[in-house]
Image 1 (cartoon, helix red, strand yellow):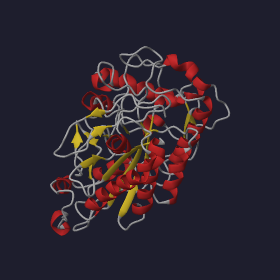
Image 2: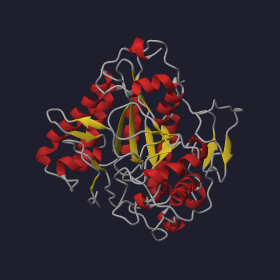
Image 3: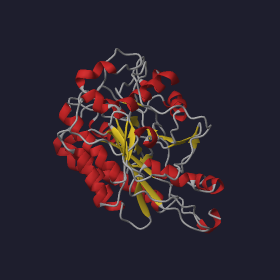
Length: 420
């Protein structure tokens, strides 16, 4: 970790600690963000959907035969394992407490954080969403294939992965999907403001190019890398990809139209809202980062590791080691306070965003691990992917969801009255 390129203040809500993560250190993406768009290379991306609103995941059919797709980078191995069947709430039933742990970048580097948290999830009944940066499957020698919007071909605000890291990342993506986790997109080059050039400055057409390129790199990694000793990914990415998070949480307004045209069912790029039941924007579920309590303070913090970092050590990722224990406890306690508020209140889903980073001695990684172990095996708690939350929401009575949205986060509900 070589430092941050920027810290963006997004706004203040009363005494709110709220900054959007935008730290793109060379080596990996380090914040929620987006990527620019421009002419895309030949891509296996899906075509725009003709339907006005993305539909729920259809019941998959499969003839039992594994089929290579395209150049053999991906394959059809049938329905994804370990997927829950969404059910409509019964009259008077309390909603489950959904918790989503999501990861931006999804690179398996020397720190082995991807594999660490994939295994942690499997051990704690937790499935997660891994947002993959497409260029993490593109060799540096082929970087000129990437045409980012408003930037020169082959440029990026994060490093391209080494060949060894590409192989390790492909292995973790394969295992993660087989574990029931979701593989979303974090787009490509992780360009952020100040404008011009960041995702907040891109048109819908540029976002569409960025998305098509991200899909192309993942679905053509075998051609681009020349690897013949690596198994294909066991899924059709053009069908499995139904959501993403823009780098630095920039550009959602124009991004949504590009995502909807490609059949996306949700977007996780909103820079922060209260812990309330989700709504759709432009026909796509909006899954924002959320404002969580800071115990003992009047402020709230955005539910992403980068934002705790920004509030604790400012513009450095290597703060005073003497403060690490206290900062780790603050972060863990805030996540747990946000969980308890809705678990004992409105039951609105809890969304937590993370990066595979060792900021401030790895304290944010440990805080998230502690939370996973604390909450994911509790009664009526489901630690799931964003896609699984979208599946469940689409199965519910819209009138019931409207009533749930009227609840304050910590408001205990009269479930027999609300759920009819």
